[in-house]
Length: 367
Image: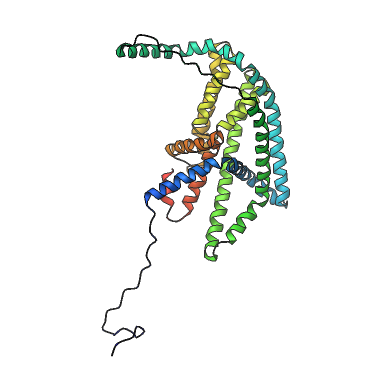
């Protein structure tokens, strides 16, 4: 008699192994590389849309701890957001009005300042130029070319129409960032809550926990870094004012020092070079000309080696190599704004990786 498929197996027969669900096939490496390239192209092509959103998100993260403190005194989130926005816009407007006269004056006097700096730069760079000329002469003699290489003159075309269109675009971008920041402050928490509600019930507690923790940690990190950089800019501007810089110029260079400090390594290097040029254009004595750059370098070293590690600890520490790669990546994609956003974005990635099971090793790789 033949057993049907539904009949139980005989007691002496070995049990059939339970079927193991097959693992989904992994995509080949070429497909992964193409996906990474496609994402990079999209990030570069959509920067006009992405950059205002990212800047607004991080500005709202700066304001979130203040909003939470105001809500503890029974203010609504909308009212607290309005107060934070008014204070932020007021401080930004005050700094901008102080900076604008100095920036316009420096833009007008740049050619004259360049002519004043030329002799001092020649004195500073004379040993390097002499070494370069000696190496060039040796190379020509070795190659049998004793004549001088022809000079190539490049001409640049002025585009007044492009400059005319740049100002409305910049104002529109600033307005978009301000509006997006306000809406993220008011409705961001509700947006995350609604996004979590779309997940399956089993994943909601984990998603709520990770979003809550990341939002708090990122808010605290961005606010702390912003306060440290603002303090650095304030101290540096005050020192320049004591060195008899006009108040508007001291505010200008102090604000630039604070902004450049958001981009590690690259920003301070640009700041030192910029303040070297400012010193050469401002002072006649060579020693006094080097003083603004030396003070900037000293303050940045004190901040980077003592203040920031002591305040943030090792939890937010990032590998210098990974940090440089991130600066190159985001700076190449989005320019100066990408340099400012590289570190907060990298910290966000590290915090997400550290909270997800199975990805903690990748978080340690960034340290």
